[in-house]
Amino acid sequence: MLATPARAEGTARWVEAKNAGASISPADHRATIHGARHGARSLLRRLGGSPVPDLSQFHGLIVIVHVLGVLLFALAHGVSAAVLLRIRPERDPAALRTLLDPES
Figure (cartoon, helix red, strand yellow):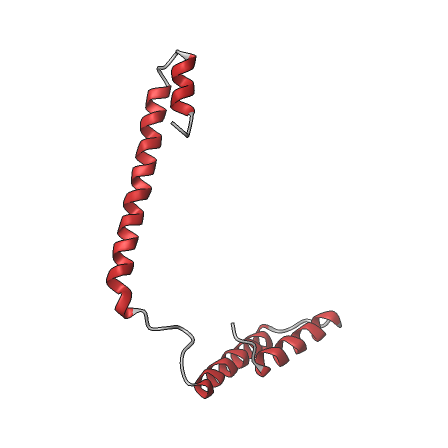
């Protein structure tokens, strides 16, 4: 989040009041938060735009990477499940070592 004068001032008031033992009403707290948000919006307008870049041109690539990630995730869990099913009936210690060795 961007540090703005409104946010810094509101936070300072809130910390001073809490340190003094005063209770902050929910309305005062909301007003402080609203002031901070409003300050951030006006600062963004003055700086000329949104801090979030437009990634719409990469949408297709992001979807493909996401789908490949899901497939890799499912494949990895499938391999783990297959090894688990093979370990259960196995009684030979050498075979168990082979199944449990991550480098094999």
